[in-house]
Image 1 (tube, rainbow, N blue to C red):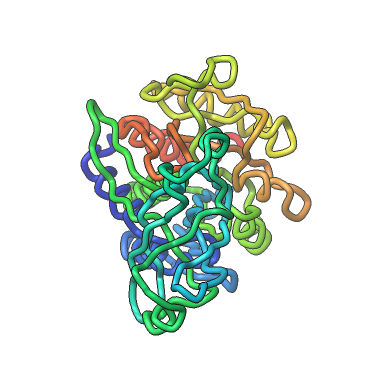
Image 2 (cartoon, one colour):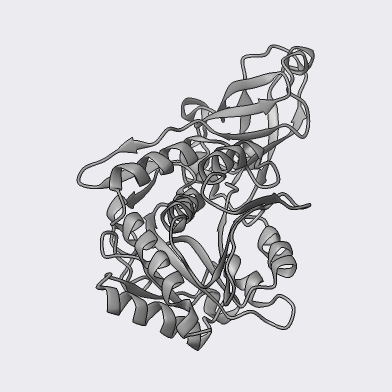
Length: 354
């Protein structure tokens, strides 16, 4: 059984770390420290993916979880020291209004806040409109461009949201970047649990980069590894809160890991039938609760893995997570632990299917 407190601690370390797409160094170091003692080989490839391998024979199983989070990048600093930014990854602009951010400058971390025109001076028609990111700016307290630059802030500096994991009621927690630090916590847990096991499969745990901006790290790492089968660990959208209907998503928090049948309406991954059978039958045999997910939007690293070389049978196991791509994502620690258990059991049974 997976230790809930231990996997929560892992999630907290990963969620509180910072690393937007293309700049995953900090979170990669956290991951490396957690897995280096429990695998046979660790490699950081040319693109920045961290590949942790437990050597075996057959089949070769690639399990991917992306390290990157959506973020911001400094675009322009005006004469008064206010910073205009570009979005990195898929933001809904309204989640950015009045957030506190950390700018990761070479001289050190700089705290800022995202500002916009105060409601008190808005015209009536402006109050009815959503504020767009292009009308927002970052205030670091500088009074001029030169002062901001002296603080180490310049175009190209990245920024991420200043949030820490917090506990909610029951087994729920909230924080930033659960998409996909939740998958990372699962993958670290899996690698730690199988470390002392004698397994036939070769297991390649891949912590990928730049998923949020085009599934890039999964594409390059899968090409280099050429596994027999690939699994992406990620988050998915539950339909169990106000504002979303069960017809949009039948997935529920607290009801176990979600196995993807199809995402992005088939433009993403359509899970290989053998992979689907493998994951479902393993869950059934081990009494692990699971859900089946069919979506018409959003995709994961599995899409890129499945289209690599001649094609790699691929699928997705996800943790239901509310409010993804916001600073206040919410998930169930029990779901997280059960996802790790399903992945471990799937690794054990992989030889019967591939």
